[in-house]
Length: 180
Ligand SMILES: [Fe+2]
Image (cartoon, rainbow, N blue to C red; front, top):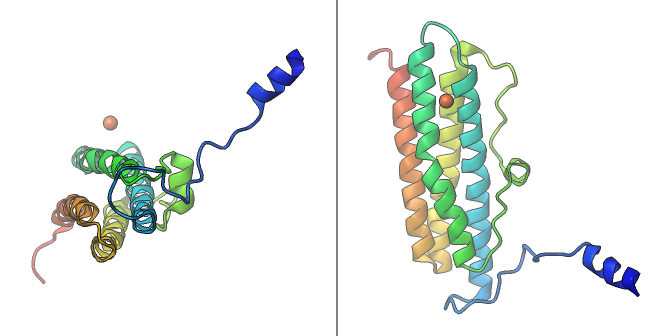
């Protein structure tokens, strides 16, 4: 008898079906909410992945520009902290399941990985490439979520794109070598 009880309590359980939105009083229909949650989860994966790559650059950068780059990368990684949290929480607001672990993000992100031993002279460009790619993806989702009928998510994604655009501006300003 005790064993039945124990078996029940240790049986693996499925917390949620991450493909389906949770029931909610939210007035958007389930199909729209599922679509929006997917767009948000893709964004979460990419900005979380990006943030970890920028921290990797922050820690491992070396050379004559070390101090400036070390601070620049930390500033940019910090710009993504609030967007990561807001995007994850918006997924829950539409009844979705936030796929927010590092492993989940890595599996879903379409950004290229940062080489384990990146070339110091290429690191600003490598990070800028990834920031630009992430922003491009977010911009397509600004449109798709608005078209799906969720202007609130679309508006949130505008803020995410603005943060990424600002990060890109910082990186490109650093790379600036004067007019050709
Ligand atoms: Fe640090």
